[in-house]
Image (cartoon, rainbow, N blue to C red; front, side, top):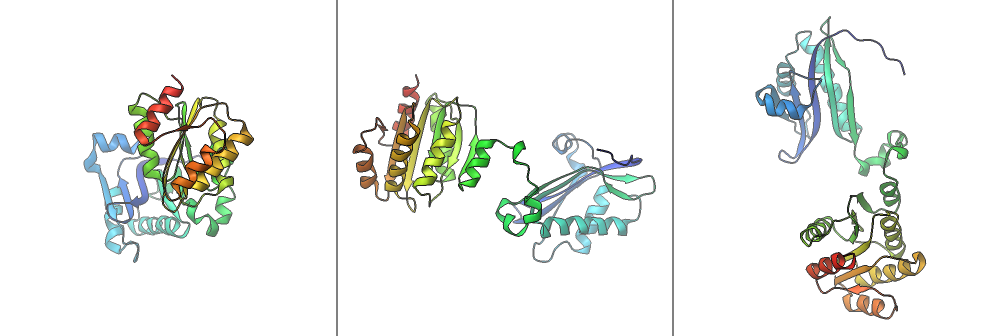
Length: 289
């Protein structure tokens, strides 16, 4: 890979990202670049400017002027402003979650150059950004996360030994916290969502058990939209077809919970039933002690 050698006189930091506080895009700029913005925020916070942008109107002339002045551009400020607008247009038209140019550099003639950049794209917008998402290199990702994505499951691998299957991100985080409080260590974050079917539950078990570090599995389901009998059927089918060799602790509550418990009880499988989340975490930790 060859690249043109650039003669850079100054280096800046520039980024656009989504900001929860302002409820829209936020431009972050700094007159110093080429290094970690986190380090700059700690050592020289006064050099960093933040300009919230109205998503409905886009950056105004005043917004652009603030960014250009904050960067400390010494060349053509009008041209610099047009480049900033172009970067914002990239952010919005390509459904980006982040556009970070570090460094955004100035050459000896005062021209701005995007010397290095990192761009993040919204997975939820992949249907309208197909040419971009078709370039995704799955070989650079955790194969378990890739497999989960194909089944519309949210999975993140961790370093522990208790696999988790939960519905809802908040409940998943709580489950991992309680496992840790009870002396265990979660092996993953896995949210099956509110409309998973039996095949998705089976796929979730396959993904969890593909991690050789997993010594037990905790299933924690609070049935609202997600029905407990669907989860129970998936657990039974997965346990039989995968011939699970690790203990499985199951806590069910909510919609069709009695039907779900009946399915588990009549399966003949050696599943460990739990009354509540705390009880489930204790039993999962005890199962591998």
